[in-house]
Image (cartoon, rainbow, N blue to C red; front, side):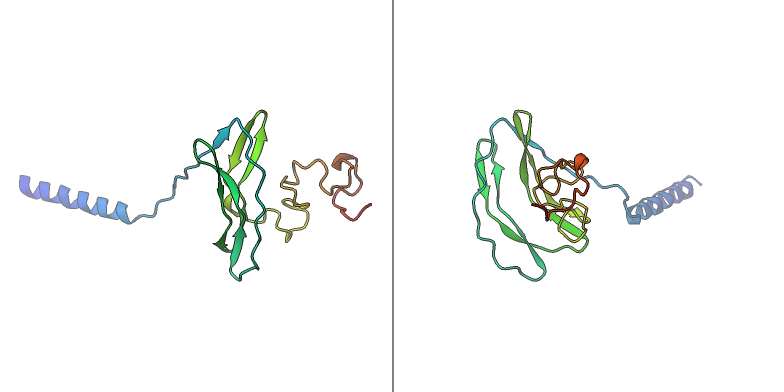
Length: 153
């Protein structure tokens, strides 16, 4: 009787473990690394942007941080991903420190010009929700009757 009980328990345990291994996982971990340093990156280098390639998006070069100094990472082609927008890496000043925003692929429209009034309409690198003069006419958005009109003098 003891052997049959052990056999039933072992069989049930094996079935449970194999079933659990086949279940899809719902949680996934994403690791992000922030780079915050005290010295500003050098000026951005001029790169010749190649002619557009079907199915690819150009990722412009940027100054990366090697742990000791800035190192130029050349631009390259990224295979397009439907429903995603490529956000270029860029340095942002945060008080007296500089923070590298890694960029990469982000779901949805982030100011590529296809969704008028969303993202970064004036392509100055500042999202519309934080931009104080979205159309670049010199009048702050809160005082501007038409803050999206970039065709003014």
